[in-house]
Length: 265
Ligand SMILES: O=C(O)CCC(=O)C(=O)O
Image (cartoon, rainbow, N blue to C red; front, top):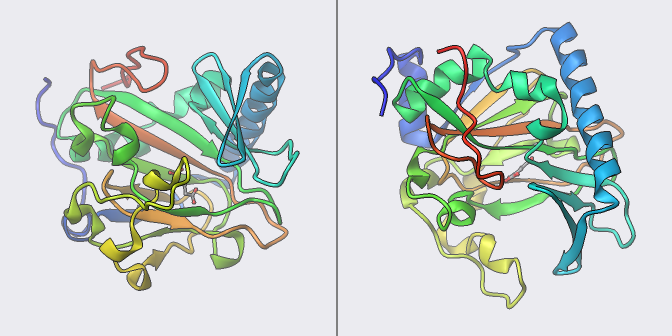
């Protein structure tokens, strides 16, 4: 365990995280940085697609997944689609994304949320949400996915890095405020393979959801128990986003089993 850091959150951010489970920092990256990050995201996808040819293919509820080494690729749901929807963990596929994990714009607030100076990566994914075909994400919490692999799920805060402008048309990210206070909620029981990972809709009020219509380069920090999701991309614009999850230093990452400590602190 490392020393508690001097918090860099503003009092408003701290209060928002405690009361609602999230806070937003808008436009933290310059246009040039965003161009470079989008390039890195596309290179990561191309790299993963090349390795997918030798991966293990499987289907859950008719949705295609491919495991290649420690990475999982999810494909868009339309039958036969070759469009990668999610790549996790993505930092293994491009060094600039690996470098981003150490960026103080992500790591400093994360020190405050984890409550330690020393941090490690838990996981980082890229959601591509391509123009017209990017599917939505049903309401869910992340903690139920992780609770069997981690003894400190409460200490796995997330940050979404918006690589493109987000609005309701292209399926912006959404959170049910205050839902992080409900702990791990029951999943749906529709008999499907993945149904248990989607939160039972009777346990939260989706009508109160906040939809984050934010410009590219914005950072959305959110609690691992937050009920969250997003609609499909109905626009001609992509809605790419990275979601990085941090934890106390020295712990192994999900999927790789390797410790990826955050550098520079
Ligand atoms: O990208 C989004 O809009 C939501 C993603 C999400 O909920 C997830 O990856 O767990």
